[in-house]
Length: 192
Image 1 (spheres, one colour):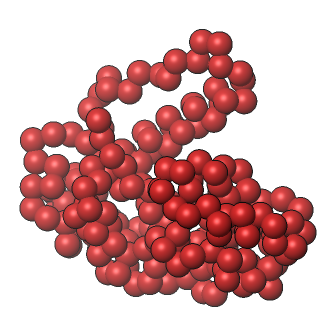
Image 2 (cartoon, one colour):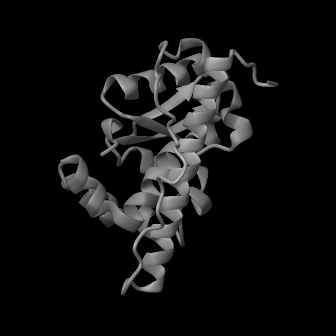
Image 3 (cartoon, helix red, strand yellow):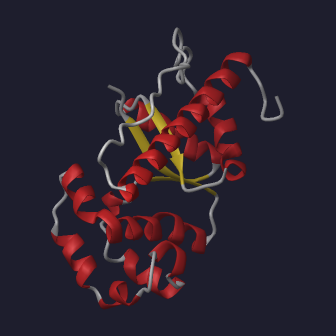
């Protein structure tokens, strides 16, 4: 079994990007599967109940990270406990240090989430310089043939599509990990 950390990663975001990428994204997750997040993390459910009962939250007509106004997002930020918002935010070096934190906490891999590949490039480059020697020594993080398609049997189409999407996301994450590993091993720059 492998443990993957999903880390919202925002390189030098402005105020709106920070609100949408961290607060807004978590709020959207709470809209969709808040009970599961609270249960998986062993969190007190009271903040989630306050979040759901809040008039501002209830007034947002869709995914909060996509359609919430800055004012709504600023208010919603006050409803979510700080420890529920782990993220890598700041300079490329600060974000790379947060990736190292995830490995130190026991993660086998880290999914850099919430940013485009171009936005993540400085973070990946910074990580190359701090990545511990031998991090992926002796193993390829994305071995060929190690990814059978998920079972879909009698699962409804909506659930099947979600499972397939999550499975594809894992492939992308492992490909990012492989790229970091290969670049580090070869001493490549971002242009290499």
